Length: 313
Image (spheres, helix red, strand yellow):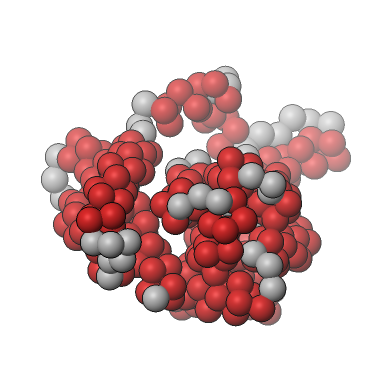
């Protein structure tokens, strides 16, 4: 229960690559799917547009009490749902399992930055974040390369079984990462002191949040849903754009260049910076969270689809 800021450098820098690779595993899963699209079209006897829905719903799943517990509770289902994808006998099962894999896989994306901030002081944090930031970018790069190799040399099911094995290994490794969230550590320390002395100890955080039920905490967050609204708006907009893409695809004889996926990226590129306003009235950054979430999803979906089409050419 020592302060994570006081952990040894060896311990800290052992944890950083662990959480980085756990995040890479999730990002890798978003794009490795591309390597089996042609095989899945033939197996399920559906169009490319239907199969690529599996890319969108995985990202939609991202729109999701201590950092360690959240990860341990969510990362195992993340691995299990990839087994479900690999065993799918119809396209509906595949898409549903992809959605839930993305939903449960969101934990490393949301928690890992917090773990780093728990362990490193402001003077050290930039280096750790720089190392960690490679993970979410490396995942979508490695996914199509490895997915393409696997798709050409074996069945599409191995795309998901490889991801399930990868995530299973990372689940075990992450289980070795100790809790770093200060309020939880302070609560544990207070409980230990209470047990050892017979007196009642409570952390300052517990005192401030006492009486706040889980329902209250959820209601507070539901009343501040800016980024979530923006992300869901981006998903909805992507479905409308996909309908236009299909019409253009049919009108062009069934072939379009990868750049045809990028118009939404242009919208997202303009929308995302709006969420970065500072030193203005407090309501502005709250409202700006909507275009930020919108831009984030539009850029991610457009670039992912672009990479898929580029590798399939």
